[in-house]
Image (cartoon, rainbow over all chains, first blue to last red; front, top):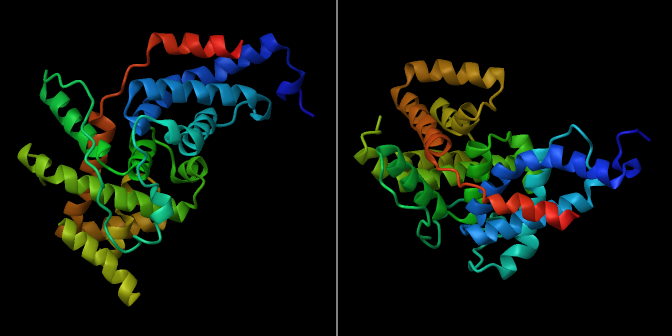
Length: 197
Length: 90
């Protein structure tokens, strides 16, 4: 029994530790939730749900370990298990369920979800950002997820495997297909912007 | 380029043997994500020095990653959220 396990802590100590270790992840967590749900209210609910669960299980969280990966995993599970059922957004096909079926084919996003980002056109940077967002939002949620985890949050393949509960080989193949799909959507736009190499 | 890339990837599965270009195509993500082993990096880098097509594929893959990491706007966390969380754990 280490002194660091939460069980001996008073509520005040536990709350202080919880806030110090887990609340700094709020920003990336909210962004992840938003990119999954594509809705600010839904993201808000999902993040609250995640922190409540994390608080409930905080005694099992080892201090100093990867708090960010742990919270992302809880959020992803909440999204899959409960949240998507009651979400305002119609649930898309869970890619993992059809992964074997589509194994040798390029999977196209089945629906073009319109971007909900603010369409201010202040600069070229904004325009590119909007275009990337709408291309990304049009991908199936499982494709979107690996791209967000990898490119936006900088998780390693190993961390992604733990967050998503899938083998590393599946992380690689899913990322491969996700990027091909995103590339296709962005290619024409990138050429128009003079990005073709 | 996209079709060629996909075709190359599928051909591997069918024939079970790979050309150097096919191996490089499969390493593109590991390279841009910094997940390739030292050995894979050496192989990859020496190949793209000689092969223009694979060099271009690598540039494109880096660009693609950069578009997401550098241009996707982050959403602002509502101020009320942190208060709501703190209130709910009390």
